[in-house]
Amino acid sequence: MKTIKKVEVIPIFCEFIPSRSEMKQGEIYISKKYAISCHLCLCGCGEESAMPLNEDGSIDGWSLIKNNNKVSFAPSIGNFSFKCKSHYIITNNIANFV
Image (cartoon, rainbow, N blue to C red; front, top):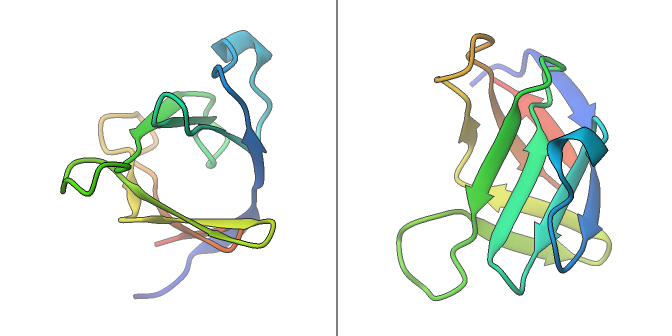
């Protein structure tokens, strides 16, 4: 799979996800307490992307992998319902668009 572009992301661990108007581009908000992660689409379109976290071992949701101060998510994020149709994989704080 060819990488189209790369975007660096900043993980923000919090109890509550901020409102869309308080979110900043390039920041990924992670609430382990509520097993959810949200961010503004990393293409820059401004749509809010929400990812339920797979904290209970089920197959639903995204797995969060922490490596020191870096995060990775599996599987990839496909924003196919957004106008931008962006698709990226976040690995070690880098979103690789495919």
